[in-house]
Image (tube, helix red, strand yellow):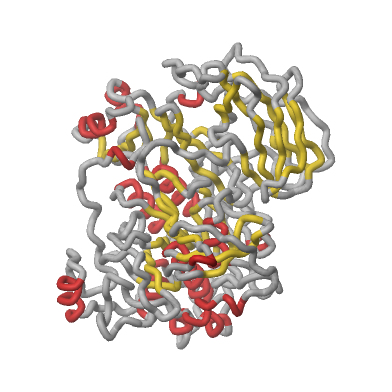
Length: 634
């Protein structure tokens, strides 16, 4: 273990007087963070009609099923590794039901399913950036001494999981550094590695569909980025380096696992984030980057973090962007939490602060990869942008010392940080933690560690963390022979507006289905025939958008976002890209449950990649600030 670091007594007084934080000094770097406080359930920030229940160890769901059935409307999903189930309750009864279940002897805790967002600030990019190498534009690299670190080592065989809005899989600076699941055969429709996820070649997608007052957890293999935030974060951590294209990734050689847990608006839900953390840890991610957060405390997130940490993963999270207390999961224990600084090593005013902040990294107007082919690189700022610098640095250090644990990697990074505000706060402080990241110092003078000896035992059987049972609402399209990839599906009349094709609901002819490229430029269109089907065949492997024109007298009900964003692999056939349309005005949904909401102890996969929760809840935040170049205000 690296030596302990003590927090400065001078800072304790200054902190209490200057920023009035409730903070007590500790004598060691690895002292426990404040435990998750007991707070009143904040219904306004949570999914309607959902509560999350943690069963006590040794308690099965069947054991408490009868008690739960009298108070809830069924099980929506579960995370078996955490002993957690997501229950459906009557809208408006979330707090009352949770309080009642808390008294059950077989239940450890109960909480609501809160929203989270990326940790970035608002704004728009108005011009495209040049396509030539941009190393000279990456000012943070010199500040954190990445070039000097690269002279010592490059990352090898390290997997960084990016839990975010997805990744533009065909980006020229990312396509060659994607993690590829070694046990999965692409596009064969089978769960080859037995992890419960069919065709999770480069990652997996967890999302929650909230519509008509009911939220339904879902998952699928569609991990393409429909927002840009995830692609930007991924590029900072691990863009391909020394390839004569675009930018350099901090890690120079790490692989990117994409776990999509946020939608096209950068919003998501705690349950999906927890499931994504478990997936990343179970599938070999040494580093898990969380450039997202929410203000509500969560035992669910803490349990997921503890699970991944116990499996050896290092979790890196952004602190948040409203200048207040640290967001969750950054405020959880066993997380390396990152604040943001500018080119002069000043903490950015929006960067959240508190005793949970461990380290700082540049987060002000950074260039990185973007999700649009016409704008392959762009600027953004926020703690979202700071966190992947630390993730990339951890990959370099862990490559140099593969024999170290996650705690030792974290300890070394903090120990060798530059205390850039020491004139005011020597040692630890809640503004930038132990200081600003310095990768060169973390590596210099450190003897290279031995490479772990590979084991010869067979690959262990993995407990599935996700299920991919085909949705009963999808009717297979007619078989079409193709030479390359294809996309097909049908349009149907969703008479009861429940977003599921029920018996007796007919196909809908005459609907225009439009195929676009990743820049939303139209490539082709088809009109559905009498059987409601369409098919786009002989497509090259690429990223696409599939949308529709609402026929006269109808409004789209499925998918909720009205379109799909996806990446086609060579030879892949996506045959269930369906569209539902309800007569307008939309009838009131019937009280009978949708087939997609049938109580089950597993998570149901659905084909929609871009679903936006509705309501007035404050979201889980992506932690970045997109930039308007003409109106730079910070």
